[in-house]
Length: 173
Image 1 (cartoon, rainbow, N blue to C red):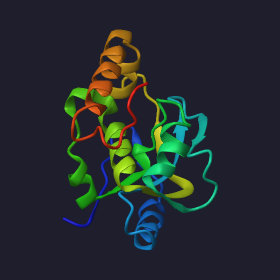
Image 2: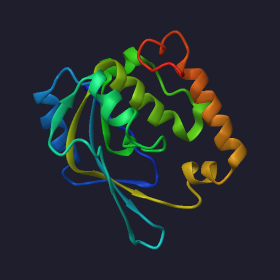
Image 3: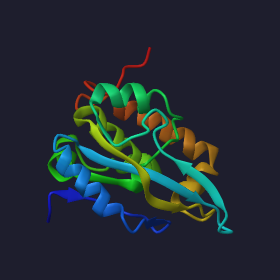
């Protein structure tokens, strides 16, 4: 029952310095709703698929909600997610809400975006977690089913327009 929350999935692995790096940054930027690190992606055969982060951020920083919108939400691919390498500030997370179950495997990414767009984030440009891409994982079985994926996209758009989120998610043009 601390001030920070992190969850992990069966296909995620923490980098040994994740919590130390993340919580140091949390102390430096207490206004942040979440702390993000880079994510290393690994294939089922163990080969390295690369590392993702926020391309526009090369150094540790605090990004205001406006900066997050500009540099991450609007600049990265819609499937871009650092949720595996995220530590949430408990109070700010609860302020935004709980995981919307109807968004399936995208719920954690949605909640990360909502928290960041309301409270901002702290970012450290080091690997915080390793995601092992497995064809049998929750996210990959969703992506493999186009109808299910389109349903989640539609539900996400609906969720973004709900009164509790419409003030910080950009409206569709």
